Amino acid sequence: MANITLKEIAHSYTGESENPDDFALKRLDLTWRDGGAYALLGPSGCGKTTLLNIISGLLIPTRGQILFNDQDVTRLSTEQRNIAQIFQFPVIYDTMTVFENLAFPLKNRGRSKKEIEPRVIALAQMLGLENSLHTKAQHLTADLKQKISLGRGLIRQSVNAILFDEPLTVIDPQMKWELRSQLKHLHKKFGFTMIYVTHDQTEALTFADEVVVMYEGKIVQVGTPEELFEKPAHTFVGYFIGSPGMNIVPCELQGRTALVKGQSIDLGTSYASPTSKNVKLGVRPEHLSLNPPGEEGLPVRIVKVDDIGRHKIVKVALDDAIFNVIMPEVAAMTGDMGSLVMSSDHVNIYVDENRVTGGTL
Ligand code: ADP
Ligand code: MG
Image (cartoon, rainbow, N blue to C red; front, side, top):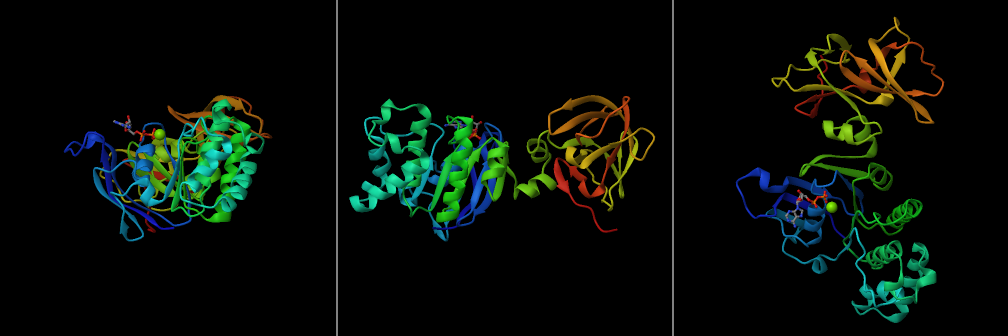
């Protein structure tokens, strides 16, 4: 097993080009630690599959190198890289039985029947395929077929990494949860490097120790679920993670004060004056609260209250800047005005969509 390093990787499907717009992947540098459980998260079309295929060797990048430890593998095949990849839709042999499909990657490498059999049976049990072992794959439903695909990816114990490309798309929701926890369990047990691609934040946050967030062909943040939540490095991460996402509103900086619609918000620390006009303040709905009108806070109008069971989501307006506030069940709202309270510890400042930190003035 190995650390996987992407060095100045960029990819254009139309070949080398001067035009940055031609690149589905912009330049990126990243190391995936040996044994890490990673999620690669981002909206459809942002370049997740492209990146995964470059790691596995299905695609040779237009620019840059891939290193396994210090070895340059940029031009090696998936087989030579010793990587298992599981795709969005099942890739199996229809005319083979479930047993034969699962055994294939081992048989192909000349392993003995004595080694193969117990491993196939154990894996089939884990995936809930034990009752179909001798059924031909073509007679199975789409989700059972996808479980075979997962099994084929997981059967070998000596791989450099296992890459999953939205593998649970065709699996029903209850089973999804089960399979995801099985994968996590397998990761703990065997310590494979796993990279799990998804556009679903819940899947990413529950599976991974570290999440790589992509947006428009770039990596915008690598962090633990907590870092993505508390300190989104890019406004996109703030908006994409969380339900609802981070409130992001234009502001002006004046030392340790942010002005939003003419109202002052204390930032606790002083910020240098940015040259760009694109300055925003971001704060999560979980970190806001409402006082009755007249009490401490910014004067806001209550636009809407959504009761979503565990808590309420209150939409408020400061002039025309909208904030979502997550409130506990107990809070009873009267009237249509309130005072919005935010603590400076949880306020993030963005210049040109990237998070900046204040000084200690
Ligand atoms: P994701 O997996 O995040 O949905 P992809 O990596 O599949 O994103 O796609 C990234 C971008 O590259 C998209 O704009 C997509 O249209 C383009 N793209 C993907 N595959 C090809 C291809 N084989 N040829 C040309 N363009 C492609
Ligand atoms: Mg994809």
